[in-house]
Length: 82
Image 1: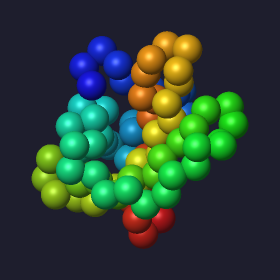
Image 2 (image 1 turned 135 degrees about the vertical axis):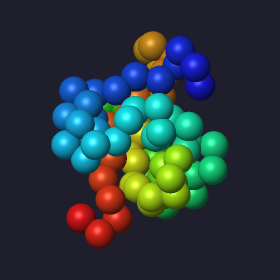
Image 3 (image 1 turned 30 degrees about the vertical axis):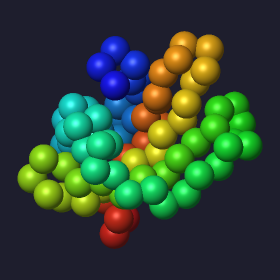
Image 4 (image 1 turned 120 degrees about the horizontal axis):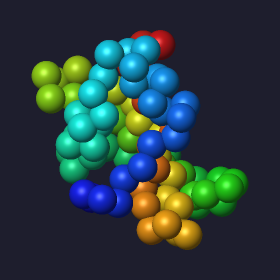
């Protein structure tokens, strides 16, 4: 996914708020479990995944696929108990 991942301003803010490094969410995508798929979401199709950070901490990540830039975009990330 190198070079094909972007982050919304909202995602950047949530990552900083939760003291999560962006690379951890990207790195955890390969082992992610799919929770929800919404191909009709606007403005872009989205998926919700349950992932683990490098230290094993579980997070929920919301991703969109932005076809115009051929990129997976992190919309937000949060801890499951939030």
